[in-house]
Amino acid sequence: MREGTREAEPGARGQAGSGRRPRTPRQELAEGTPHGDVYLGRLIRAQLGLSLLALGAFGGLVGSLPLLFLLFPGLQEIEPLGVPLPVLILVAPLFPLIVVIGLLYQRRADALDEAFRDVVSRE
Image (cartoon, rainbow, N blue to C red; front, side, top):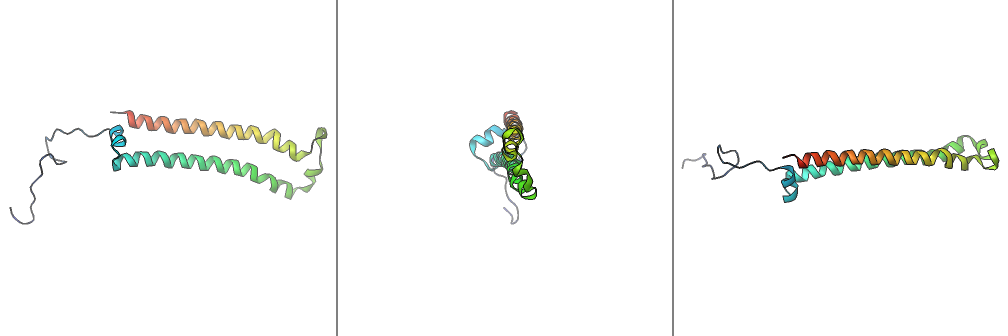
């Protein structure tokens, strides 16, 4: 054997006619290969991004209320229907918005999981 040349190993990747089928994403995940880790890492990153978005939306809603009352102190003294306005602002629009954020989060999380299942289940 001359210097600078290598003999091909039997069954090596890229060898013509080796007869090896490429692994499916499901096999990559099951065997814990680096390629499978990429699939899983993408799913986890997408779920984390979605969770942070939902947390930011929720925090923005709840965190803006003290700012609202600080900028408009007269709102604390208004009592429509005998209930302080801050309580009405917390109950009336905030809880439905939290439910909407939760529903949107669940819908998007299901879509992410479905897309992951589609990638993993294709053969």
